Amino acid sequence: MPNFFEDNEDIKFHLDTMDLEEIVRLQEKDFTEAAQYPFAPTDCADAMDSYRRVLSMVGDIAGNFVAPRAADVDEEGTHFENGKVTYAKGIAESIEMLSKADLMGFTLPRKYGGLNLPTTIYSVAIEMISRADASLMNIFGLQDIAETIHSFASDEIKDAYLPMFCTGEVTGAMVLTEPDAGSDLQAVRLTATEDADNGVWRLNGVKRFITNGCGEVLLVLARSEAGTTDGRGLSLFLCESKDGVRVRRIEHKMGITGSPTCELQFNNVPAKLIGKRKRGLITYVMALMNGARIGIAGQALGIAQAAYNEAVVYAREREQFGKKIKDIPAVAEMLVNMKVHIEAARALLYETSRFVDLEENLNERVEAGEKDPALKQRLGPVRKLAAALTPMSKYFACEMAVKVCYDAQQVHGGSGYMKDYNIERHYRDVRITSIYEGTSQLQAIAILAGLQGGALDARLEEFASREYDPSLRDLVEKTKKARELLRNALDHVREKKDQDFTDLSTGRLADIVCDVYMSYLLLSDAEKADRKKVVARKFISDMLPRVEMNAAQVLSGERVVLDSFEVLVEADAPDEE
Image (cartoon, rainbow, N blue to C red; front, side, top):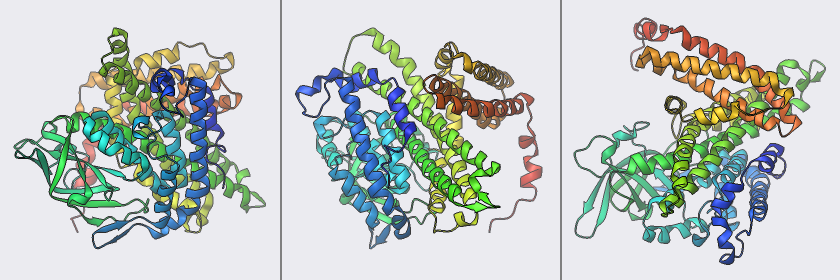
């Protein structure tokens, strides 16, 4: 099998061309740790060389160790017996391999045994692991749990738990969802009661659909304020599964079968408060979820890359009507569209990751008490942009990946429906990405909030004001027209002041802004490589008709879905079975 880093020219293109110098300098604290830690870089070039070495190691493990085990993992699944969860053999072996390679503390500081790598580099690693086995990513990619502990917990908690995450001694789970509180986390009912005698909190209740719920360290969202019913009564707690957390069952799922999804019972489980009371949802879980959403975007991208690769190989080998099916225009179009949209999603994910890195590092300096007023002044817009781009990345990458896997299976024809081919597994695995950690519909709502709040305006204006290569002039004009249509559609929704119509238009507006933003990203990439000019031309030529269609739908003010729902759906809706 290939090295999943070395064989991906697009990943290497971005590492070669992204402006990471400021992020590296901030992440590495101006390289002051070089005197304390033997492997800490001494300058930006040294850091980038180190990052590439780590990514090559991840790519090698992903391609040559994880991927060959993925089909067996899918077949074996997760075991549950007598209340105990056991990973599939291949998952356990892969976790051990990643732990031995010191890759389980990817973004954590060196003082805890971590690698201190930026989110941007972590996103690359998540993509490669997901390409190899999407199930494994759900354990490897949960390192945001440790990041949340690092960001918000006391020094005592950090010192106790973070070294264990770095060695792979423990894995974690974010324990949020309940049977009656899925996307609406304000409805969480699991209770946290403080034992006044010893300061320990006790957790009681049930959680459901918990990814890696068998992990040793759990971050639990619980209602700490008796009598409350909304998010202001929720706090975040850390507990250990060995202290009385009971796995009641594991879910039998369509895909990612090597990733255990658990239902958990908490009976007076002792727990430690993370940060301050009442900020569990509005501060800590939102930070945790944003990190997870970037991870799921990377997971979707990795699955899409794997599916595309399977489709290309099959199309090159399969003959029909006297020629390779790759030479049939309808199949060729599917392959080209897959490739272009994967590269567009990658550009958006890396753009998002860079601004998340910038926001986290600037915020760390502000929190540390640096007095430079320019830091705070810059942090505000960067934070808003990172918050706006995060749902965009998840929304586009996941919807893109579902479509890529659908088309990749179509390229395989009937063979793609059989378990003999990996595409059948990718098709099942990818479907969850647009559902968990916030559905695509919720991401679209968050995208619209960012649009209406102006979080993207300055960045889009920066893109629009650049001087592009003359050969790209027609593409620049098309993108400019698409941006005007975005403005018109958004203004129309605002002027109507009709919340139902706004909600109905949310998905179309999300599609438009993703198209516009990625067009500018691809134009920027086209300045750096001739091959990217081809990518930009294909994407933007297809983009403008899509934007025109979506904008026309919004500008029409059409409410037929809202006005005819009773007639078309409710009038003859089937009774519950």
